[in-house]
Amino acid sequence: MALSVVLISAHIHTIIQVRDVSVPIVAQLPQMERKLSALKQQVELAEMQTVNRAGSQQEKVDVYALPKETDMSRLIATFEVIRDVLKRDGVLASMSDIDVSDADTHILSVEFSVHEEGLQSILLLVRLAGLLTVSDVLTEQEIALLVDRVEQENPTGIIALEQFLSLDLLRYAEDPQTFEEQLKRSFTSSSFLNAFENVLRTSLLYDTKKLLGGTLGKVLEGYKLWPMQMMALDSVTVQPGSAPKWYKLTLTVLVFSNESTVP
Image 1 (cartoon, one colour):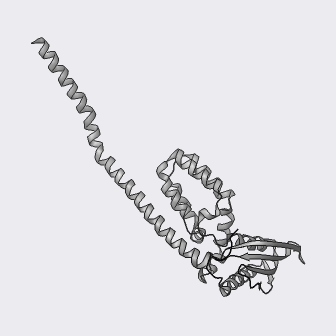
Image 2 (image 1 turned 60 degrees about the vertical axis):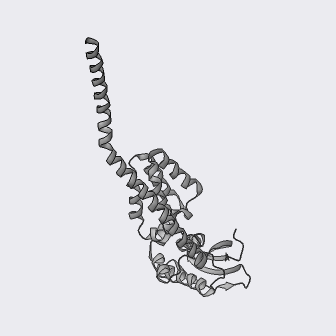
């Protein structure tokens, strides 16, 4: 009888232990399932958005950034818009006629009488030609740094980072604070936030959002001249102008199409 009581007591104690462990777990299951379901939905949504963005971006590449043939009227209109906006801003005095070769890979030559601020804007625009997203402006090292910080702090935040990097560049430049704050909300520690702020401050993205976030970006968008066709500087000549901080800028630019070789 004494042995039976001991065995029954031990059995009851075991049941109590199992109950104490299992009941909290069972209570947490609905919440865990909801979190898992939400995460799956986020991943599926991100995958769908990635596919849609990839298709949309590919269309922009084929039509605008790297078309089969160069639309010369659109190319010239782009430079004329740049001229008009910079002249209105008081950082450009004049632009010469645009000389374009007849070769498959068009070589474009043009001269500007320009203030140093306008000079920097023109060179940056040529550099941005053909770029579509935020990630296009960042270096591999800058992107790798952000990904590394995400993996260390909050791996699920990779979805938010991917959405930020795939933003249309002009759309981001028009309202950078909204998109930056949206990404920051996915993180709480200083590790990622410090790295992100450093990239925003030191990368090409800093000058890009200043340039495209102003009048020039709005005008290019309004005339449907963005994205610009892919270009690369072939040669640059800068000579002193008639006043301090004014220069004569001579550019020779290679304009690429889908039929030509991209460097």
